[in-house]
Length: 248
Image (cartoon, rainbow, N blue to C red; front, side, top):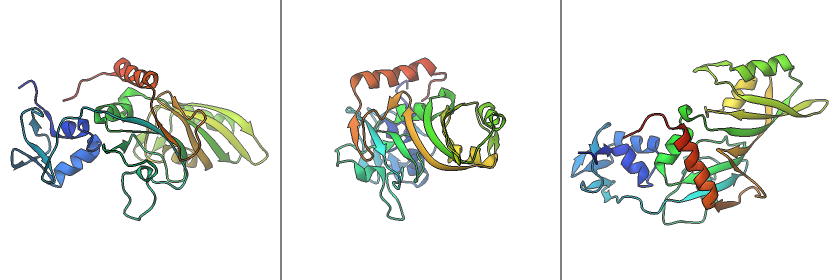
């Protein structure tokens, strides 16, 4: 019985989808275990039970892939798009293993994006309890005061609750705009834009320059590469150092 894991975790670790996407597959009734339709919360033994998605049996993942992509503007951070727009997977050459993006990056934003088939790592890197750093270069329309910036540093109330404290410091000032560097430790939907909108300012440009210690280095928009062993080791160390509660 010690080998029993949640079905969603098994699917994620098999590289079929992220943890959230795996849960959607279960809700839609597309997953079966030993011929029975799986329910949310069900567990199974990946080595013994016959687990199928859309009638196709899955096997435990043996070859995990980790890639870094310089996401350009005008590309959707998704595995597919109902509107037919270019997705981040369209930029990657076909691989035998299906990858999925870790976290989100706005359609009109650019920068570092991690792609992998390691569902467990993806879950840890995006869960707010791990406080994984995300560093951005942001162009603001107008001239926010130091007092206004301090409000954002301390955390500001959005519709779903207060944002976590973050790091902000100005890097360049023009007559009309201000460039700032922001480091967040959570990844809410459109978070940076909504934070600045809350105090009356518009974000003109947004570029993620680092994620969990991964940077763009000399990459150009649209370029991608596999992580080096040292980079992967650093990612694993981030997770191990910040792990609080085991899953499964």
